[in-house]
Amino acid sequence: MAEKKTNGKKNSGNAVLIDPIYQKFTRGVLRAISSTEFYEYFMDAIANAENTFQFSNRKLEKAVDLNWVDQIEQALPAMQNIISNPRNMIREEELIVNAAIAKRAGSDVVRHLTQHAAYVEDYDQSSGDVRPTKLMQKIRDDSEELYENRLVFTTMEMAFRFVKIRHDALFEAMSDEFGAKLKVNSDMQSATEMVHLEMFLHIKETESAIDADERNADTFNRISRIYRLLATFMNSAFAKQMAKVPRIKGNIVKTNVLKKHPDYRRVAKLLEFLRTYDQIGYSIRVIEQAPQINETFQRDIYHNILFNYMILKGYLQDESDRVVPVAAKEHRKTLKPKFIRQIVEELTEDYDLPDVEIRKVLIEQLTKEQLMHEEAEQRRKLVEEQARKKKEEEERLRKERAAEKERIRKEREAEKERIRQEQEAEKQRLFHERMLREAEDRRRSGIFRAEIARFEEKKSDQLEVRAKDQARYLAEQEDFADAAMLVEQAEQRKLAALERKRRREEEERERIQRERMEQLERERQEEERRRQLQERAALDRQIAIDMEYLCEYDAVLKSFDKMLPARRQIRADYEKSVKEARAQWLAQRRGQQAKAGQKTPV
Image (cartoon, rainbow, N blue to C red; front, side, top):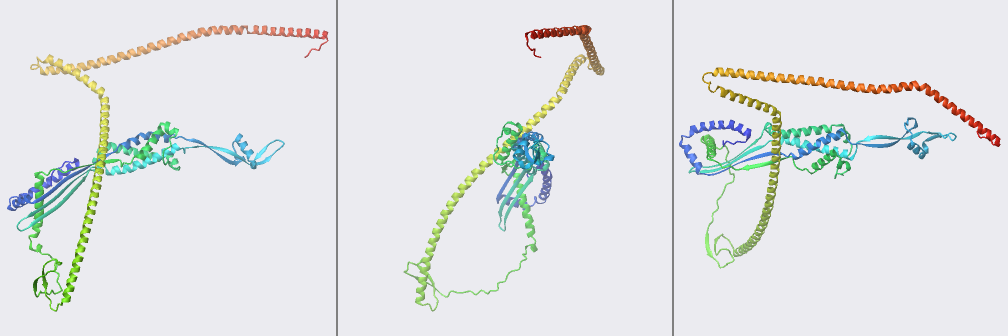
């Protein structure tokens, strides 16, 4: 009854609280009655009685299925990208507006006006001007109501409901449960009394919310993050706009965007997964066992029977408690006994009757006709009784056959149900083990990554510490070898020398390091100065080269400017001589034509 059971922190805490109280109570009671003859007698009677003890415990382990968590987490970046930059299409709409507010008048407007003469107010035939009353205008608008965007919003909405249901269910039902059952039946009998005890005790413990949260902290954080992000997505401008359009139902149409665009393809894959996923989101593994009842536990049960017996027996010891406070009922009817006057035994030759020897009750004034009538009535009743019994026997056999068939059918159905339940339990067990393995692998991989990150962070420090330890170890070995012969004579002197030596070494290392840094700084500055001088020299050389080139070009320009007036004069003289030669040629030509009597064309 007070057997210790270790089942996590909660059971340990209860054991720490209950066991001392029970031990104190048992010791106090047994100290008072263990020395009496009644205790020995009763314990011996219980041991020899017909006792039936049934003890069993049951544990429910719950694990989250991380498959749906991984699928939704992989689709969250794609949803964010689509919400930030959704695909859209340009939609054109033709509107008829007044000509006074029309902004554009292109060829399509003219074509529409020629097809709708009713919109023409005036036409000037002389000038060809047309004055319309109304004109057609094309208005372009960007629309996001594409099939792909509708599919994204449908997936987002379904994922939000999917996660919300499992978020609320998991946070309420993820605590492990542990229960124990004890059933006691005992029958004792002595010369004066009979004792029968039936007891059933069921204890059910549930893991605390803090322990369940600590055990599933990583999984709960991931689910909460998914729930928050999906809630944010559902409150975005994209979601509010797409909430007005119809949802996607039926099979998914694989458009080119859904096939080639990685974000839309990822969302379509998530929608297919959500439509096919029919699990609750977590599995329950039931572990039942019937442990052996040891001697200590059995003795505690005997003590419990003794305590219950003493409570009831002590109540019945008082005479006032044995009085049943119920008024007796009175019979108002007076019973009158009847007597049989005479019994005669006779033999009969009528073998149709069931018994040869018949006991008859002789009654006065019984006639022969009445006797014959009674015999015929008895024969009729006997025949009816035999027919009834035969019919009842046939009915009984029929019912037995039907019951046997029903029993066989129920046994077959029970066997099928048992096989189905075993298969379902095996399936659930494999599913639970797979989720536990995945969770353990993720936990181990997370620990391994954390160890690697921590190792990388502390790698340089560890190397430095190791180098210092190695240097210190070498120094200590040298110091120990030098001071081994003088350890008894100059221990304090050696320690002081070692301390001074260590300080000098540290100062020397610091000085060397400082000088090295200063030397490196001077070299760097010298290198920088040398580089600047080289760049300045290169720049001067380039300037000199450019100046030489520019000097030649400048000399050419100056000579050109100097010769420019003379060249202009030469060009003017040349053009003048050409004009004079042309005029002279034209005069000669006209003279020749005049002589020939021809007219020279102008």
